Structures are given as C-alpha cells and as structure tokens.
Length: 273
Figure (cartoon, one colour):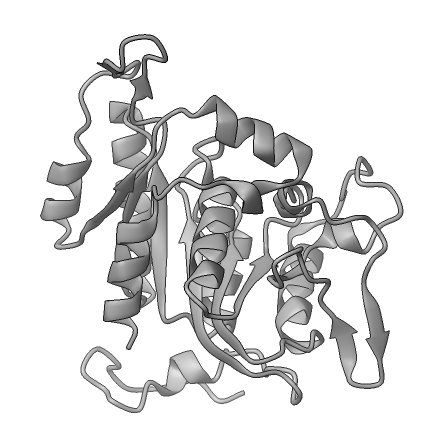
C-alpha cells in the first residue's frame, strides 16, 4: 500500500485514512457507525453502548452493536444472548438479534462457554475486530454502536483506522482523575480526525429512595467545563441506578423504561443527519 506523501491537514481527499479502512461485507448495509469510548475501564462504557442501542431501536431505527471489547465482552450478558448462537453461510456470519431486534456481534457469542478467557495478543484481537466488520452480514442498520475497549492502545487505534466512524461518544465518571484521562480520549479523536459527538458522565449521582434527595458520591461534576474546553457537548449524566444494574444482570436491559439517554439520542440524530 502506497504511503501518502503530502500534508493531509487540509486535504479533502483523505487518502491516508481511506486506505486503512477495512472493507465492509458486500451484503452489509450500515448507514452510521458510532464508537463508544472511555479513557479507562470501569466507567460503564458497555452500559452506555447498550442503552444507546435500545434508545435508537425504540425510536424506530434499526440498531446494532459491534462488541470490540474482545477481552471483556459484556454486551451479550446485558441482552440475554447465549454462547454459540452465531450462524453463517457463504455470505458471512449472521449477527444474533436481541428480543427487540438489535443485531449484536461479540466474541462471547462465538465461544461455547462465556467464562472462557480470550488470551490473545494485540494483532489477533485487532484482526477479530476487523472481521466483525468485514465478515459479518449487518442487515440495513441505521445506527451501529461500537463498544470499544478502554484506553488509547492497539484495538482502539484499529477501530479508529479500520471502521468508517461517523463520530464517538466518550464515557466518563465524575472523579478528577478521570477528567484527565477523558482528555486523552478527546485528544486521540482529534489526532485521528474523528468527531466527538459528546460526553456521557456515569455514576453522576444517586437519588435517595426515601426522600428523593440528590446525592453526589464522587463530589461535584466538572463535565460541563471539560466539554466546554473541548468545544463539545454533555449528552447525559447518568445516576447510579440499582434497577438498571439488576436488568443488565438478568439479561433484560431492553425492559428499562428510563429516559436517561433521550437527549443524547436527540443530539446524535441531529449531528448525523
């Protein structure tokens, strides 16, 4: 593959970026691809991915989830999808569907035991992510959400370079330390010329079940200042909600009736028209 030899900063051709894109399956039809990113683990990235897909599906769109968190796949558990449920033909692999019709592809759907660890090196994991794009038949998807592994390492870089991302959503929590790590994710997106659609803050508060008082276990949020400093939006502030956790554990996240990400969905719809 020939290397681009000129300054791409103001180039409309975007030749160096396009040359790295993995080919989509010929039978796939995907309109928009959104990465869900976090600078560190444990902030609820997979939860946000699942809820965004559920929200878009409820709005009448066809949603899908590509689980690129190969070594920590939790998406199938949240939707109650079983191991070994992937079928295929000469066209490629067909992603299983959730109860409401969301298409999902995850490494945990290919193994015979969901507790088996994926002990693979970086290049193999990166290759698997590309296969989930190229070898899977995605059927008329309006919004695909890519659940990315935390950090700014090998696999996130593969997703940024290999998948035609229309934008990313960055998930954080209120701690000051996380704010610094979020900036790394924002700066990586800028470096890779990928649009940041906005920030979602998880664990933002707790509502007292007795009196309804708002409790902030991690102190005051700085997400608004962080978003403003990077000229982006706050899409949502999610509470610590035991009922949501319970639904994920039972594999029925689609039964959640909250509207936590409705504003996020509004902004994504408007930005990606």
